[in-house]
Image (cartoon, rainbow, N blue to C red):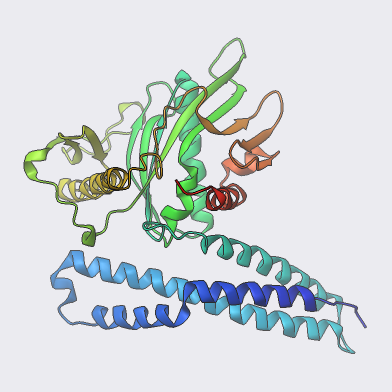
Amino acid sequence: MIELDFSQQIADLRATFGDIRAVVDVPALEKEIANLSEQAGVPDLWDDTAKAQKVTSALSHRQSELARITEIAQRLDDLEVLVEMATDGEGDEQSAAEARTELAGLQKTLGELEVQTLLSGEYDPRSAVITIRAGAGGVDAADFAEMLLRMYLRWAEQHNYPTSVLDTSYAEEAGIKSATFEVDAPYAFGTLSVEAGTHRLVRMSPFNSAGKRQTSFAAVEVVPLMEETDHIDVPEGDIRVDVFRSSGPGGQSVNTTDSAVRITHLPTGIVVSCQNEKSQIQNRAAAMRVLQSRLLLLQREQDAATKKELAGTITASWGDQMRSYVLAPYQMVKDLRTDYEVNNPTHVFDGDLDGFIAAGIRWRSLKPAK
Protein backbone atom coordinates (compact mmCIF):
# COMPACT_ATOMS: atom_id res chain seq x y z
CA MET A 1 0.00 0.00 0.00
CA ILE A 2 1.27 3.48 -0.88
CA GLU A 3 1.56 5.98 1.96
CA LEU A 4 0.09 9.29 0.80
CA ASP A 5 -1.32 11.65 3.42
CA PHE A 6 -2.50 14.92 1.88
CA SER A 7 -5.31 15.46 4.39
CA GLN A 8 -3.83 18.62 5.90
CA GLN A 9 -2.88 20.11 2.52
CA ILE A 10 -6.36 19.44 1.13
CA ALA A 11 -7.97 20.92 4.25
CA ASP A 12 -5.83 24.05 3.82
CA LEU A 13 -6.81 24.28 0.15
CA ARG A 14 -10.51 23.96 0.98
CA ALA A 15 -10.20 26.68 3.63
CA THR A 16 -8.48 29.01 1.15
CA PHE A 17 -11.07 28.17 -1.50
CA GLY A 18 -13.88 28.96 0.96
CA ASP A 19 -12.37 32.40 1.61
CA ILE A 20 -12.06 33.02 -2.12
CA ARG A 21 -15.68 32.02 -2.77
CA ALA A 22 -16.79 34.42 -0.05
CA VAL A 23 -14.83 37.31 -1.57
CA VAL A 24 -16.02 36.53 -5.10
CA ASP A 25 -19.62 36.22 -3.80
CA VAL A 26 -20.72 33.35 -6.04
CA PRO A 27 -24.49 33.86 -5.55
CA ALA A 28 -24.17 37.51 -6.63
CA LEU A 29 -22.00 36.45 -9.57
CA GLU A 30 -24.60 33.88 -10.68
CA LYS A 31 -27.34 36.50 -10.40
CA GLU A 32 -25.31 38.94 -12.54
CA ILE A 33 -24.74 36.24 -15.18
CA ALA A 34 -28.48 35.50 -15.30
CA ASN A 35 -29.21 39.22 -15.75
CA LEU A 36 -26.60 39.62 -18.51
CA SER A 37 -27.81 36.43 -20.23
CA GLU A 38 -31.32 37.88 -20.30
CA GLN A 39 -30.01 41.11 -21.85
CA ALA A 40 -27.96 39.13 -24.39
CA GLY A 41 -31.07 37.20 -25.42
CA VAL A 42 -33.05 40.28 -26.44
CA PRO A 43 -33.83 39.98 -30.20
CA ASP A 44 -32.86 43.56 -31.09
CA LEU A 45 -29.65 43.56 -29.00
CA TRP A 46 -27.38 44.08 -32.01
CA ASP A 47 -29.32 47.09 -33.22
CA ASP A 48 -27.01 48.96 -30.84
CA THR A 49 -23.58 47.45 -31.58
CA ALA A 50 -21.74 49.26 -28.79
CA LYS A 51 -24.24 48.14 -26.16
CA ALA A 52 -24.27 44.59 -27.53
CA GLN A 53 -20.50 44.34 -27.38
CA LYS A 54 -20.50 45.64 -23.82
CA VAL A 55 -23.15 43.14 -22.69
CA THR A 56 -21.58 40.12 -24.42
CA SER A 57 -18.09 41.03 -23.19
CA ALA A 58 -19.31 41.43 -19.60
CA LEU A 59 -21.21 38.14 -19.84
CA SER A 60 -18.14 36.33 -21.18
CA HIS A 61 -15.96 37.71 -18.38
CA ARG A 62 -18.43 36.77 -15.62
CA GLN A 63 -19.00 33.29 -17.06
CA SER A 64 -15.24 32.77 -17.21
CA GLU A 65 -14.90 33.81 -13.57
CA LEU A 66 -17.68 31.44 -12.45
CA ALA A 67 -16.31 28.59 -14.59
CA ARG A 68 -12.95 28.92 -12.87
CA ILE A 69 -14.57 28.69 -9.43
CA THR A 70 -16.64 25.66 -10.52
CA GLU A 71 -13.59 23.98 -12.03
CA ILE A 72 -11.55 24.37 -8.84
CA ALA A 73 -14.35 22.87 -6.74
CA GLN A 74 -14.43 19.86 -9.06
CA ARG A 75 -10.63 19.53 -9.01
CA LEU A 76 -10.61 19.48 -5.20
CA ASP A 77 -13.16 16.66 -5.23
CA ASP A 78 -11.19 14.76 -7.88
CA LEU A 79 -7.97 15.17 -5.89
CA GLU A 80 -9.52 13.43 -2.90
CA VAL A 81 -10.62 10.57 -5.18
CA LEU A 82 -7.08 10.29 -6.61
CA VAL A 83 -5.59 10.12 -3.13
CA GLU A 84 -8.09 7.43 -2.18
CA MET A 85 -7.25 5.43 -5.31
CA ALA A 86 -3.52 5.71 -4.61
CA THR A 87 -3.77 4.57 -1.01
CA ASP A 88 -6.30 1.73 -1.19
CA GLY A 89 -5.33 -1.92 -1.32
CA GLU A 90 -4.71 -1.85 -5.07
CA GLY A 91 -3.11 1.58 -5.13
CA ASP A 92 -0.43 2.27 -7.72
CA GLU A 93 2.39 4.75 -8.11
CA GLN A 94 0.80 6.29 -11.22
CA SER A 95 -2.25 7.43 -9.22
CA ALA A 96 0.05 8.71 -6.48
CA ALA A 97 2.10 10.69 -9.02
CA GLU A 98 -1.08 12.16 -10.52
CA ALA A 99 -2.26 13.16 -7.04
CA ARG A 100 1.06 14.88 -6.26
CA THR A 101 0.97 16.75 -9.58
CA GLU A 102 -2.64 17.83 -9.09
CA LEU A 103 -1.96 18.96 -5.51
CA ALA A 104 0.88 21.20 -6.73
CA GLY A 105 -1.29 22.52 -9.56
CA LEU A 106 -4.16 23.37 -7.21
CA GLN A 107 -1.83 25.09 -4.76
CA LYS A 108 -0.52 27.27 -7.61
CA THR A 109 -3.98 28.01 -9.02
CA LEU A 110 -5.50 28.89 -5.64
CA GLY A 111 -2.46 30.99 -4.79
CA GLU A 112 -2.99 33.05 -7.95
CA LEU A 113 -6.73 33.34 -7.31
CA GLU A 114 -6.09 34.37 -3.71
CA VAL A 115 -3.88 37.19 -4.97
CA GLN A 116 -6.73 38.32 -7.22
CA THR A 117 -8.96 38.76 -4.16
CA LEU A 118 -6.56 41.56 -3.12
CA LEU A 119 -7.61 43.51 -6.22
CA SER A 120 -10.31 45.70 -4.75
CA GLY A 121 -9.61 48.98 -6.55
CA GLU A 122 -12.40 50.76 -8.40
CA TYR A 123 -11.00 49.89 -11.82
CA ASP A 124 -9.18 46.64 -10.99
CA PRO A 125 -11.79 44.37 -12.69
CA ARG A 126 -11.31 46.18 -16.02
CA SER A 127 -9.37 45.13 -19.07
CA ALA A 128 -6.07 46.97 -19.48
CA VAL A 129 -4.38 49.26 -21.99
CA ILE A 130 -0.59 49.03 -21.79
CA THR A 131 1.86 51.41 -23.42
CA ILE A 132 5.60 50.71 -23.57
CA ARG A 133 8.05 53.48 -24.46
CA ALA A 134 11.80 53.33 -25.03
CA GLY A 135 13.70 55.55 -22.61
CA ALA A 136 17.36 56.44 -22.12
CA GLY A 137 19.81 54.12 -23.84
CA GLY A 138 19.53 54.71 -27.57
CA VAL A 139 19.19 51.64 -29.79
CA ASP A 140 19.45 49.30 -26.80
CA ALA A 141 16.46 51.03 -25.19
CA ALA A 142 14.39 50.59 -28.35
CA ASP A 143 15.34 46.92 -28.49
CA PHE A 144 14.54 46.54 -24.77
CA ALA A 145 11.09 48.09 -25.31
CA GLU A 146 10.39 45.48 -27.99
CA MET A 147 11.59 42.72 -25.63
CA LEU A 148 9.10 43.95 -23.00
CA LEU A 149 6.28 44.04 -25.56
CA ARG A 150 6.97 40.41 -26.46
CA MET A 151 7.22 39.50 -22.77
CA TYR A 152 3.78 40.85 -21.92
CA LEU A 153 2.16 39.37 -25.04
CA ARG A 154 3.66 35.97 -24.18
CA TRP A 155 2.40 36.27 -20.60
CA ALA A 156 -1.12 37.01 -21.88
CA GLU A 157 -0.91 34.14 -24.37
CA GLN A 158 0.05 31.69 -21.60
CA HIS A 159 -3.06 32.74 -19.67
CA ASN A 160 -5.28 32.60 -22.78
CA TYR A 161 -6.01 36.33 -22.48
CA PRO A 162 -6.98 37.98 -25.80
CA THR A 163 -4.67 40.83 -26.81
CA SER A 164 -4.77 43.45 -29.53
CA VAL A 165 -1.78 45.58 -30.53
CA LEU A 166 -3.26 48.98 -31.33
CA ASP A 167 -0.20 50.90 -32.40
CA THR A 168 3.54 50.35 -32.86
CA SER A 169 6.12 53.02 -33.64
CA TYR A 170 9.27 51.34 -34.91
CA ALA A 171 12.75 52.70 -34.27
CA GLU A 172 15.07 53.31 -37.21
CA GLU A 173 17.83 50.80 -36.42
CA ALA A 174 16.14 48.17 -34.23
CA GLY A 175 13.31 47.75 -31.77
CA ILE A 176 10.43 50.13 -31.15
CA LYS A 177 9.98 53.68 -29.95
CA SER A 178 6.62 52.78 -28.43
CA ALA A 179 3.72 50.33 -28.59
CA THR A 180 0.18 50.26 -27.19
CA PHE A 181 -1.89 47.10 -26.75
CA GLU A 182 -5.00 45.87 -24.95
CA VAL A 183 -5.37 42.86 -22.70
CA ASP A 184 -9.04 41.91 -22.67
CA ALA A 185 -9.53 39.79 -19.55
CA PRO A 186 -11.21 40.13 -16.15
CA TYR A 187 -8.93 41.95 -13.68
CA ALA A 188 -6.30 42.58 -16.35
CA PHE A 189 -5.87 46.17 -15.15
CA GLY A 190 -5.67 45.29 -11.47
CA THR A 191 -3.21 42.51 -12.23
CA LEU A 192 -0.94 44.39 -14.64
CA SER A 193 -1.08 47.78 -12.93
CA VAL A 194 1.81 46.69 -10.67
CA GLU A 195 3.95 46.46 -13.82
CA ALA A 196 3.71 50.22 -14.38
CA GLY A 197 6.99 52.05 -13.95
CA THR A 198 10.52 52.19 -15.29
CA HIS A 199 12.24 48.95 -16.26
CA ARG A 200 16.05 48.75 -16.51
CA LEU A 201 18.16 46.40 -18.64
CA VAL A 202 21.90 45.73 -18.16
CA ARG A 203 23.66 43.62 -20.78
CA MET A 204 26.54 43.40 -23.22
CA SER A 205 25.16 45.49 -26.05
CA PRO A 206 24.67 43.65 -29.37
CA PHE A 207 24.71 47.06 -31.05
CA ASN A 208 28.10 48.13 -29.72
CA SER A 209 31.10 46.96 -31.76
CA ALA A 210 33.31 47.27 -28.68
CA GLY A 211 31.06 44.84 -26.79
CA LYS A 212 30.70 47.13 -23.81
CA ARG A 213 28.11 46.69 -21.09
CA GLN A 214 25.11 48.93 -21.72
CA THR A 215 22.31 50.12 -19.41
CA SER A 216 19.00 51.06 -21.00
CA PHE A 217 15.51 51.93 -19.83
CA ALA A 218 11.89 51.56 -20.90
CA ALA A 219 8.68 52.92 -19.38
CA VAL A 220 5.51 50.87 -18.92
CA GLU A 221 2.16 52.65 -18.49
CA VAL A 222 -1.00 50.72 -17.56
CA VAL A 223 -4.49 52.26 -17.60
CA PRO A 224 -7.97 50.72 -17.27
CA LEU A 225 -9.94 50.23 -20.46
CA MET A 226 -12.70 52.78 -20.88
CA GLU A 227 -16.31 51.60 -20.64
CA GLU A 228 -19.34 53.34 -22.08
CA THR A 229 -20.87 53.87 -18.63
CA ASP A 230 -17.95 56.03 -17.50
CA HIS A 231 -19.30 59.00 -19.47
CA ILE A 232 -16.02 60.63 -20.43
CA ASP A 233 -17.24 63.15 -22.98
CA VAL A 234 -14.69 64.33 -25.53
CA PRO A 235 -16.04 67.28 -27.55
CA GLU A 236 -15.03 67.25 -31.21
CA GLY A 237 -13.52 70.70 -30.74
CA ASP A 238 -11.07 69.29 -28.17
CA ILE A 239 -9.42 66.86 -30.55
CA ARG A 240 -7.37 66.98 -33.73
CA VAL A 241 -7.55 63.89 -35.95
CA ASP A 242 -4.75 63.11 -38.39
CA VAL A 243 -4.78 60.18 -40.81
CA PHE A 244 -1.75 58.49 -42.34
CA ARG A 245 -0.65 55.23 -43.92
CA SER A 246 0.17 52.31 -41.64
CA SER A 247 3.77 51.15 -41.84
CA GLY A 248 5.92 48.40 -40.45
CA PRO A 249 9.63 47.99 -39.70
CA GLY A 250 11.93 49.98 -41.95
CA GLY A 251 9.04 51.96 -43.39
CA GLN A 252 7.58 48.96 -45.21
CA SER A 253 4.03 49.77 -46.26
CA VAL A 254 1.29 47.78 -44.59
CA ASN A 255 -1.45 49.18 -46.77
CA THR A 256 -1.84 51.81 -49.46
CA THR A 257 -4.64 53.86 -47.92
CA ASP A 258 -4.66 56.47 -45.17
CA SER A 259 -6.29 54.13 -42.64
CA ALA A 260 -4.09 54.81 -39.58
CA VAL A 261 -5.41 57.45 -37.18
CA ARG A 262 -3.68 59.77 -34.73
CA ILE A 263 -5.84 61.72 -32.25
CA THR A 264 -4.45 64.65 -30.26
CA HIS A 265 -6.44 65.83 -27.23
CA LEU A 266 -5.74 69.55 -27.36
CA PRO A 267 -6.51 70.50 -23.72
CA THR A 268 -4.13 67.89 -22.26
CA GLY A 269 -1.72 67.21 -25.13
CA ILE A 270 -2.41 63.46 -24.95
CA VAL A 271 -1.69 61.77 -28.30
CA VAL A 272 -3.07 58.35 -29.27
CA SER A 273 -2.45 56.42 -32.50
CA CYS A 274 -4.01 53.27 -33.90
CA GLN A 275 -3.11 51.44 -37.11
CA ASN A 276 -4.06 47.88 -36.23
CA GLU A 277 -7.49 47.80 -37.88
CA LYS A 278 -8.20 47.67 -41.62
CA SER A 279 -10.35 50.76 -41.88
CA GLN A 280 -10.00 54.36 -40.79
CA ILE A 281 -13.34 54.18 -38.96
CA GLN A 282 -12.24 51.17 -36.91
CA ASN A 283 -8.88 52.74 -36.09
CA ARG A 284 -10.55 55.97 -35.00
CA ALA A 285 -12.94 54.08 -32.71
CA ALA A 286 -10.06 52.14 -31.13
CA ALA A 287 -7.96 55.30 -30.69
CA MET A 288 -10.89 57.13 -29.08
CA ARG A 289 -11.34 54.24 -26.66
CA VAL A 290 -7.70 54.48 -25.57
CA LEU A 291 -7.91 58.28 -25.34
CA GLN A 292 -10.97 58.02 -23.12
CA SER A 293 -9.16 55.47 -20.96
CA ARG A 294 -6.27 57.87 -20.44
CA LEU A 295 -8.64 60.75 -19.73
CA LEU A 296 -10.42 58.52 -17.23
CA LEU A 297 -7.12 57.93 -15.48
CA LEU A 298 -6.34 61.65 -15.49
CA GLN A 299 -9.77 62.44 -14.06
CA ARG A 300 -9.32 59.93 -11.28
CA GLU A 301 -5.89 61.35 -10.44
CA GLN A 302 -7.32 64.85 -10.20
CA ASP A 303 -10.43 63.88 -8.27
CA ALA A 304 -8.64 61.67 -5.76
CA ALA A 305 -5.48 63.79 -5.56
CA THR A 306 -3.41 60.63 -5.99
CA LYS A 307 -1.42 61.48 -9.05
CA LYS A 308 0.88 58.45 -8.88
CA GLU A 309 -1.69 55.91 -7.77
CA LEU A 310 -2.18 54.15 -11.10
CA ALA A 311 0.35 55.11 -13.76
CA GLY A 312 2.40 57.73 -11.95
CA THR A 313 5.15 59.85 -13.44
CA ILE A 314 7.49 57.56 -15.35
CA THR A 315 10.74 59.09 -16.58
CA ALA A 316 12.46 55.91 -17.85
CA SER A 317 15.91 56.94 -16.66
CA TRP A 318 18.35 56.58 -13.77
CA GLY A 319 17.01 56.69 -10.21
CA ASP A 320 13.45 55.82 -11.17
CA GLN A 321 13.53 52.10 -12.00
CA MET A 322 11.22 49.56 -10.34
CA ARG A 323 12.74 46.41 -11.85
CA SER A 324 16.18 45.46 -13.13
CA TYR A 325 16.90 42.84 -15.77
CA VAL A 326 20.61 41.94 -15.61
CA LEU A 327 22.11 39.77 -18.35
CA ALA A 328 25.78 40.61 -17.71
CA PRO A 329 28.02 40.10 -15.79
CA TYR A 330 25.52 37.77 -14.06
CA GLN A 331 21.94 36.63 -14.70
CA MET A 332 19.16 38.08 -12.57
CA VAL A 333 15.79 39.84 -12.67
CA LYS A 334 14.91 41.71 -9.47
CA ASP A 335 11.94 43.84 -8.49
CA LEU A 336 13.34 46.72 -6.44
CA ARG A 337 10.05 47.29 -4.57
CA THR A 338 9.36 43.76 -3.38
CA ASP A 339 12.90 42.27 -3.54
CA TYR A 340 11.42 39.34 -5.48
CA GLU A 341 14.09 37.99 -7.83
CA VAL A 342 14.86 35.07 -10.12
CA ASN A 343 18.07 33.97 -11.82
CA ASN A 344 16.64 33.07 -15.22
CA PRO A 345 15.96 36.21 -17.30
CA THR A 346 15.22 34.06 -20.37
CA HIS A 347 12.12 32.59 -18.71
CA VAL A 348 10.99 36.05 -17.60
CA PHE A 349 11.33 37.48 -21.11
CA ASP A 350 9.34 34.46 -22.31
CA GLY A 351 6.40 35.61 -20.17
CA ASP A 352 7.09 33.99 -16.79
CA LEU A 353 5.85 36.99 -14.79
CA ASP A 354 3.35 35.50 -12.34
CA GLY A 355 5.78 35.52 -9.41
CA PHE A 356 6.64 39.20 -9.94
CA ILE A 357 3.00 40.18 -10.38
CA ALA A 358 1.83 38.28 -7.28
CA ALA A 359 4.63 39.79 -5.18
CA GLY A 360 3.75 43.25 -6.50
CA ILE A 361 0.06 42.90 -5.67
CA ARG A 362 0.83 41.67 -2.15
CA TRP A 363 3.36 44.49 -1.67
CA ARG A 364 0.83 47.08 -2.80
CA SER A 365 -1.88 45.70 -0.50
CA LEU A 366 0.44 46.14 2.50
CA LYS A 367 1.37 49.73 1.66
CA PRO A 368 -0.20 52.26 4.06
CA ALA A 369 -3.11 54.17 2.54
CA LYS A 370 -2.26 57.69 1.39
